[in-house]
Length: 221
Image (cartoon, helix red, strand yellow):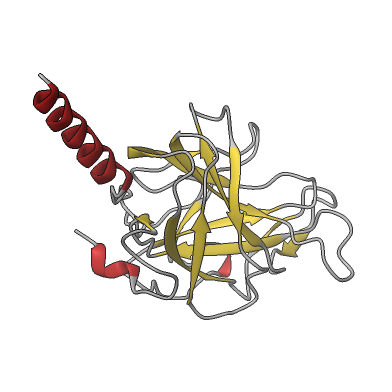
């Protein structure tokens, strides 16, 4: 009986260890879909404000955005607005982010120098070209029980650059959300018009498998 108990505990510990090492693969990580405005790519949900347009799939020339994708053919573009609204996309994960587990994740980001739309405040054409940050949230259910897991520095680069983020949830989350948000630094003290282009998400890799600076795309399916 004692031998059986020890074997069971060893098996349980082994399963728990494997579970903690689980690599999480995002659905449609490079946002591939038909280019169009005001509709998120397949596999991703609009998590923005009611009454405001959703994110866009580029490049199709909409809003003056013309940069080619880094990976595949398309990418997602999100904006922040001068009326204190912003865009966000999210999806349910195939495996949850586990509490008190360290993960590494990479994503390609850039700022389009031109993003012509209508200011919500002035009702006139404006260039939504100021830098934004990317905020990454975990959530228990759609739009609820959310925790901010990390955010980037303001994305000022006009060509694609890889950003690697450490995610350390304090609870277990079934959803992930990617959100464009304001950078209140320097002279910025109020909401403004800006944009953030997002492409080529890596798998979310536990830190007991990968280390900072590793090529996380090697774990792609």
